[in-house]
Length: 203
Image 1 (cartoon, helix red, strand yellow):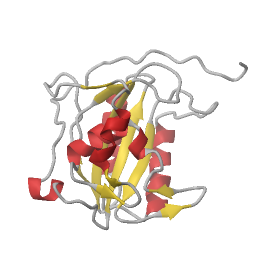
Image 2 (cartoon, one colour):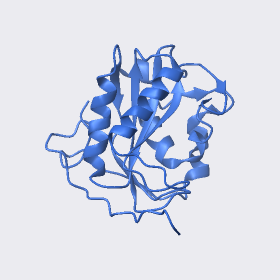
Image 3 (cartoon, one colour):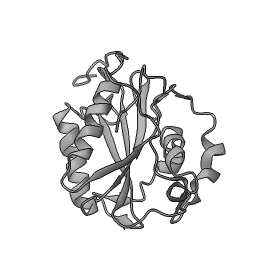
């Protein structure tokens, strides 16, 4: 098809730093069933180029947003594309606080994607970087530009698995306990990569 780009294989070149996956705050905070105002959960994904290095750079960019702090990041996962083209994805979820309002945060995520060459030549094309605003505190939105909670977060193992690693008891308006949705995505191929210093994300 004219205009389609040919996906390139993921190059799994490990970052040159020790892995620091699942750097979560104390258990009491992880066990909370709701996300506090000013906190957000962001999904990170990529399946073109050196995906692990790109995700690390994106995490660093999130930490550099004014007033924003990365509370924790999940382990790195490798997953089969779901409703998308190309090679396997690398995925993670970051837990942020001190975030700007949701519209401003979404704009910042799009700017970071653009800095890393994100292109949208056709629907569900392979991507150098994909940043999804999954949750922004307890807020709910339903507009063409922004839908909160993310409308498909409970349908994707590559979102649920790393998210629940950070917040295992999280409940979401309209969805209830996210852990209850794991059986529905059990058939989706996903692998948690070992946090052994070879491949991982550093907060």
